[in-house]
Image (cartoon, rainbow, N blue to C red; front, side):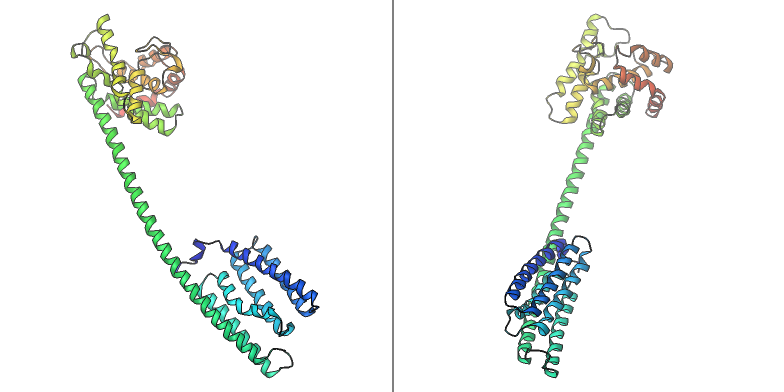
Length: 395
């Protein structure tokens, strides 16, 4: 059995506090009644019990509840047995003796202490009965009255004990059901979490493969989209984006050039410079990529649509397709723009050879505030060796 079954469902501090308030109210009424009837020994007994229980009530907020419980039961034990020396056979106070076992059942947390307290109380009554028989002049109660109290207390103790055991069994059943339910919920949650992870992984993989398909068609280097994703994630982290945005930009970046699927091969793979007409066709891939993805309800594809549209916009407004400028360009697009150009310049393309690292660095320094966001571009330059190292990992 757990250390305390009821502790998991009830507040014992609250239970004992309420019981103490009930006792104090009764004692206050008894004090008034005994003062009115001039029963001074009983008045003193009730006053002492009232003061003791009041101190215990205060102690419930300062001491361990186990200590307070035993102090409460000890005071009540002395209070009840004081009736045999200061009481009156005609007083109704004596009937509280029969209620003590039931009250103890509300306070004790374990079966063994409950039986121990019940037994000690019955043994106390038997001891008083023996004293009554041996020295009747000390007590005004007859063996008959005490015998009836022993019977009544034993009977109520038995009922309280069976009630206590029933509560334990009920609590066990409730806790068992609750545990089973929690396990089922935990298993279902874990299954759903794994399915979501698999779905997200599949979605990321599909996006990456689609980006690679576009890349192969344009005859770019084999790991271009993966490198752009890694640069974008690193730069997003440097820029202080929250982890969710960092993950989204990393996962969506492979589709930055998805619009190239609609550009004819003759233009897409032309080895030389574009003429004005060819360049106007090539520029359309940014808007085409956005139009392909914008209607999706998935956050990942919505982010990819924004990146496809904005990664060729320039900070000074001279980019395409919408000639927006500054912070009107989505930060996803501004980040991927730096990553895309860095990788494009680092490797050979059909229309140019690969650039040296110092030449790429000089180009970015020149284009800060022109083509690129000056703050993001400066972050890139401040960590330029790390970007080169990252590039070398995905050659």
